[in-house]
Amino acid sequence: MNFHIITLFPESMESYIKSSIIKRAIEDKKISVKFYNPRDFTNDKHKRIDQKPYGGGPGMVIQAEPVIKAIAKAKGRKKKVKIYFTSPSGKKFTTDIAKKTANNYKDTIIICGRYEGIDARIKKVFSMEEISIGDYVLTGGELPALVMMDSISRQVKGVLGNVLSCEEDRISSPEVYTRPESFKYKKKNYKVPKVLLTGNHADIDKWRSSKRGK
Ligand code: SAH
Image (cartoon, rainbow, N blue to C red; front, side):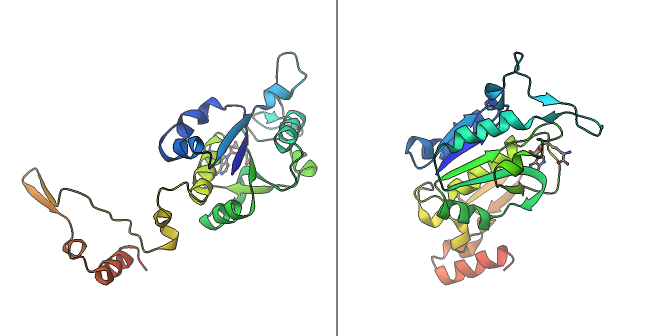
């Protein structure tokens, strides 16, 4: 999976993709991440890309043309590319969307808005899906893009060390334990639930399902 991120602030995303599983996935060439900054696609001599909204109102709007050029560059000659536009009023992002994206596309473009958003005409030039990561408003689309990228990457074969780590496909639990079997903190003992030590996998699955609320 190749991710193409359209953002004014690539540096805000870099430390995340340089850590842990995503870092390894990039090193192992299971995924790649490229940034395209609309600022590099403007003819304005001050590299300005935001202007006041038509019709008035607060804030600034990112101009369509630099974003369109950035998308065109990301798309290149590739035919099958999924384009997501991050927006608080989009369709809610889910594991199902992550799975479908990972299974059906090799290239995903994610457009990060900022300020009041991006001139709506970009949606007329390229067909894209508007996605929200939750019912709250953030200051930019970079966190949503990271959330989507992280979740889609987990669904790409070979990204998680063990295929079975994809909890969607097995009985996992929000409650997990590791060594030691018990420890003391402020005079109180904290023990691992007994069932997990039994080796009885039917019982363990049952216990995990109950924790999952299923
Ligand atoms: N007034 C705008 C808010 C813009 S917030 C509106 O109602 O749409 C600035 C940018 O942050 C958005 O363009 C979008 O890219 C991103 N963003 C904010 N909250 C988000 C959310 N919950 N999900 C996805 N993207 C979000």
